[in-house]
Image 1: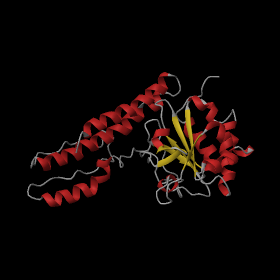
Image 2: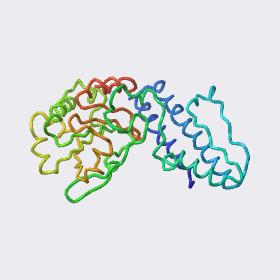
Image 3: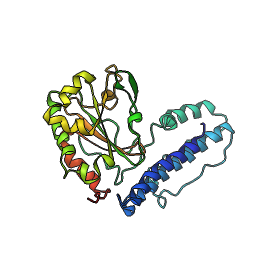
Image 4: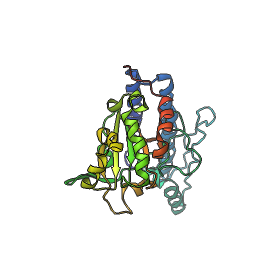
Length: 291
């Protein structure tokens, strides 16, 4: 199991720190953003208690009862049923325990319930496969002809909200949608500038083009707003392991993903719908920057 509780404490700190930081700088309302800490971390912490408790009883060959939580009063309606260990039935326990909790133990299946910063998923096909409230996947990317890394390497800054733009090859149908996103970055009245622009948002554009192919396309008038406001990363991995496939992006429509400072997905939208969706999303919990 490792230091499961310690990892949870680190995630507790990561979850609450950026929220307090925004509120302390009068960039978000504490009454709106503050309650999301309990909404997100309480359920996750109790899952850890029950999952690790089940395994500990298996290791110690114990029938000591697990901690019990009142789901009604503790707002834990989504708390999963624990797997109870019965001495002598080791193989049955291992098969059920790891079959049910494998992803959770790896840290890739710890979704947060819907709230003001993890909106419920809209009907229809989602723009990307990682849904709101889950940890953002971390695919490998090319940063320059001589440097590769992972997406998280470009998502730095505890006070930054990350906007990850999936731009495919910058041509064809996706180019029209990208022009609309470029206009968002150029317009002083858009949500991007209303809530702080480059001082508040870290924007990354991921393209299937190579650097020499992307440069002239991004220098054209419709897309210059992207060039001026985004860090460009190149998705040059094999098609079955590249970032677009990892996020299951529609190459014709592209997508923009809001990744919170603690690296959880907050919201996502197809490029051609991003202005309306993200304007509504950020208006729900951010405060405009004073001019």
